[in-house]
Every structure is written in C-alpha cells, then in structure tokens.
Image (cartoon, rainbow, N blue to C red; front, side, top):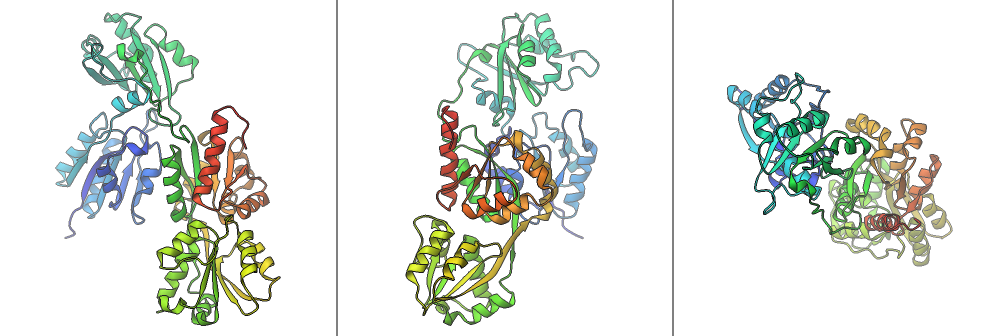
Length: 514
C-alpha cells in the first residue's frame, strides 16, 4: 500500500508576494501539487518544482469555480496518492479562509496536515495604507468581521449590533458590496456620522487605492473614485491617520512584465524587485539544446584545432560546458583556448566554470564584440561560436572580413513553455492595464511574443514602454511591427534595470522620458 502524503495549508499573505512567510515559501519549493485560489501574483507559483501539479480552484465572490466540498475531497485524493500538497490560500488559512473545514475533511480521512500561518490583509492592507489597527490613546483594540455574508437575506447578522457597539478599529473583509448596509447598521447602533472610515482596494499591491472619509460620505467617495473588489472597509478613529511609508525605492509603484528563459528572468526579477518594482513573469521560454547534434559533436571532438571560443550569452556558456562533460572531456581540453564574451553577465557565467574571459567589450553588444575580435585575431586563428539559432548576423559579417576561420554552430534555441501557453495568452491580452514596462531579452523572446496573433500582440503593447536588452532584440521586435522604446546601454540585467530606473525617475518627476 502506498504511503499517504501530507497537506500543508499555507497562507499566501495579503497580495504582495514578498509577504509570504519563509516557511510558506519552503513548503512551496518542495511540494508535488499546489491547490491555489486567485493569487495577486504568479511569482508564488513560479517557486514550485518543475514536476509540481498546479490546480486552480479559483474562488471569488460570485464566481466560484469549485465548491468547498469538492476542494476538500481533492486535497484528500491528492494526499492519498502519496503527494506533498500545498493548499495555498490568500491571507491566513484561518482568517475567513475556510481552513478549518479543510482540516476537518483531512482529519476524517486520516491525512496528516500542517498549518503555515500567513499575514492577514486585516492588518497588512491597513498598514500599507498607513492606517494602524491600534494606536495609543485612540484605539486599544481591533475587531474583524466578514462583510461577505452580511446581506444574504437583506439583513445584518444577529451579532452585528454587538460588533457595532465595540470601541476600537472595526474591519470588514470582503464587504464592499454591502457597504451601504454596513454604514447604515453602524449608524443605527449609535456610531456618529463623523466617525472616520476608509476603504482600501488591492491592499499591498501596486494598484492599491485608498479612499478616506467618514460614515456620512464614504459611500459617495467610493463611488466617485471607482473603488472595486477586493476591498477592505475600516471604521474608527485610526482610519483618519495616515502613516504611509515615506521611504521610496527607485522603482516604487512601477509594474514590469518580463519575458525570457528561467535563468535570465529569475535574475532580472531579483534585480528589479530589489529596486522596488513589482515584477511578474509574462512569457517564459524554455531552452532547446542541440549540444548532442552532429555539428556540436564534431566541434567537441576537434577542440584542439580552435584558438578562440566566442560566447554571446550565459545560456551558451552553460550548454557548452554541459556538452563538454557529456563528451567525457574536462577543462584540460580547453587549456590552449582563449575566450571572448559579449558582456559582464556572460563573463561571470564563464568564471563559474573556472575560466576568465580574455576579451569582453566595453559596450555589451554583439557588434562591439565582433569589432574587438577583428583587432585581436589573425589568419592563423580558428574560432568556435556556439550560440542560438537566431544569433546576430553582424558577428558573421565582420568576421567574414578577416582572414580567420570560424565555425558558427547552433548550440541551443529558445521556445515558449507549452504548459504556460494558455496562461500567457490571457495575460498578454491584459498587458496594457497591468504593466508600465515589458522587457525582452532575446530575439527569440520577441518572436515568441508575437507568434500566436501578431495584431493582438501589437495592440496589447499600446500605452506601455517596451524595453530591449540590446540592438539585436530591438531589431527582432521591429521586424514584428513594434519599435523598442528603451534599449539598454549595457547588454546585461543591470543594463536593463538602469534603463528602466532612469526612465521611471524622469516619468515620476514629471520630466520628459527618454
């Protein structure tokens, strides 16, 4: 009999993916299946292993795709198959998350479980809006009630009167649709119309919206500002306070969609996030290796005849050395060879394998790499260029003007990840209102973005800034009908980040953009 698995009920936090706990992230990184609701960011799903099964059971008011009883049964069935299951829930599993119901089902089926607490929006969303749940001499307590079920029969629940009479800060989750009923109920129980009130939409997220007023005018202000769910209602004296963060990072409030292979987008995500940007994966590319193909095999067998190996990407470095080891060779086969790299990132990747780059141009562009090589090679040199099938032709054109011999061999290519294709299509259709920038890191990535429906892709890019890592990527983008708005001066992740930071600073300071 197969050993049963375990279910981890993990709180995903209030929306900002950075607010999940370290323990919650650890469970995600080691699970076999994740059962998730409507999350604010797909970053959390990117943390799961490649083999992990992702099961969406999206639950939002008025749009339940799976009944709670069905979710309970699903968790039991997955665990009975011996899997480690993460039930990823917004906020905290026990704060109106129905985590207790799922545990009762697991206990009944004799399934092991663990609860990993999450940061609840009842506290975090308020903090993000600058509203403390308690404050000395103003509020000594806070109280949380769901607003979702208030008007199922057009009336307030029996305990509402007692709740309305409490001092301190009153917080209603999922209650925007019942705002008029809540306001009138509070005032009927003696709350003055001048009592401060606030409504927070998308708390902790880039699209956060905060409307402040009092019980008399909060409904009118919410309508005027077009506030929508998900939103939190706050009533009490602390709602008049504004302790919003004053420390700002360079990309504060900036929303960036990124495309590329996991090795690249992972580093870019980290870089942009560290600068305060909100970053989401828009289109993931997988690497198709050709290191076992006939031409690369021949190159490995003839390494002694090459005097230079030219790397135009970090991907090429990794694939080359993987193939070298598979051939039964090691670093001794490369002792006589010099290395050229297109930029610092590629040179750093090469250094991981124990080799320093003999030449890296000051400007991280393929044309600069080619020009520099022309000055350094002679007719006695023979170069190996293992790279993508869509590598720049500028390198060939310049090397053709020399007397040196070279082999330009396809080592890898990139393509869309099939398992994310449908998700990517849907997200591309919503790009304009989600992001301020979108980045492209390769010609392949640009072509993949336009592959399904070029007209729809072009339309989705209207109104946002398109950033390319270099001229070759920009040329591929233009061939698909869209010019790049920004091109990184340095062919690197840092170059992309600098280009976005400079433009965002000028934009937010009211100056003319680049």
